[in-house]
Amino acid sequence: MAKPRSQYVCQDCGAVTAKWAGRCEGCGAWNSLVEESVQAAPGGLSGRGKAAGRIQFVDLKSESQPRPRLTCGIAEFDRVTGGGLVPGSAVLVAGDPGIGKSTLLLQVTARMAACGSTCAYISGEESIDQVRLRARRMGLAEAPVQLAAATSVRDMVASLDHPASPEHPGPAVVIVDSVQTLYIDSLESAPGTVSQVRAAAQELIRLAKKRGFALLLVGHVTKEGLIAGPKVLEHMVDTVLTFEGDRGHHFRILRAVKNRFGPTDEIGVFEMTDEGLQEVANPSALFLAERRGNVTGAAVFAGLEGTRPLLVEIQALVSTSPQATPRRAVVGWDSGRLAMVLAVLEARCGLALAGQEVYLNVAGGLRIGEPAADLAVAAALVSAASGQEVPEETVIFGEIGLSGEIRPVSQVDLRLKEAEKLGFTRAWIAPRRKQAKGKATAAAGAGMRVEEIAHLQDLVARLAAPESDGRSGGDSGNRRQQAYEKAR
Ligand code: TYD
Ligand code: MG
Image (cartoon, rainbow, N blue to C red; front, side):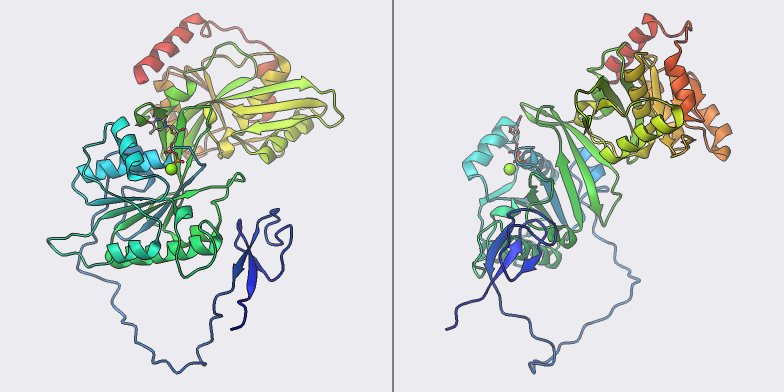
């Protein structure tokens, strides 16, 4: 028998080459090619004389009601999935190792099981005792979850692939933790390689569609933030949720990055405690809780994550650099966007920042993607450079254009309402869109001093010349503190 041919598969992007190389030509990753044996090459249709079956076409219109979504009662999770899990769908939950994926899914499973759905939790990483121990610690030891420790996909398919009958309703939800531990015995490569992960996921997803259970796959991400092994996995599943957070902080954020059955901009905020993950119903209060008043280089951004307003503090530090190329470091925001804001400040407002080191940080470990944060970032930078504080009770939002103009942002009302609720009394915002103007002033921000900023120079002027007014005193700081306490 001829020796099986080998090929080299990039574990990051899935690109295939015939020869080994130190660097993948597809994605540029170093040392990511792994040898795998070539499976039988697929022949064209003309080759074999196999009889073809007929596909049945049906009407789009249907009388039968779709099966209801499965909710778990953890509001932060249900919202991110778009209102619950869809029967027969596949969800990938991706995140760094140790971030809390197993913890989250065990809690979700336990809650769903408690609501009456049959739930199966298959762990390939932990033994049954370990899962039990964890469940006991989180007070979920009594939940009617079906538990198994397995890694062979053949075994899983054989066990789950029987039609549901009234006596034996198949599981409605199946959790597989994690996809990197799965293996299919017909493939030669090791568990965790692209071909194994892809084939295993494919088998399980096919089964989920056939049997109508919701499949939740856990996937670890690599240090570059890619879903380990296959980007391809993202195309195969219906929903991709990422679970992120800073190990140094106890906040965890669940984000939908792809969702065939719901919006992709929603986030769920959790706090990791000794008893597992707790929902955070009011994240703004949490993200602002560690804020100190009267510091230069800090500005509060009234942002929007999905349908929910979220207030976060943006911190900046500007210092003279001993190096020829000053350092620019960003945590929680896009570095390209920072370069743009710095360039606009320099070119349109005459601020000399080119020779300075610039550090920017979004407090609390959150990642912001909205362009509306531009103005708050600029305010933090200008304040850090000028040494003039942003008035303490002020929220800021607006997008910056290349000529320095401030462009309107969406959902002004929602942002102002959240700020008002948390005790902020002043807002520096982008000019409102014409038609929204009358409505917005009546609805939101009525108790606030709302100032529209038309150009970045206006902002620089405000932070250069201290303004004395009766409203910014210790009194409002107290009021804000009380509002936090109430909101939490
Ligand atoms: P885990 O869910 O095992 O992470 P993953 O499945 O994403 O690899 O979470 C592990 C971390 O969570 C670990 O560092 C301990 C912490 N943790 C708590 O702080 N409290 C808890 O109740 C649990 C179960 C875990
Ligand atoms: Mg785990």
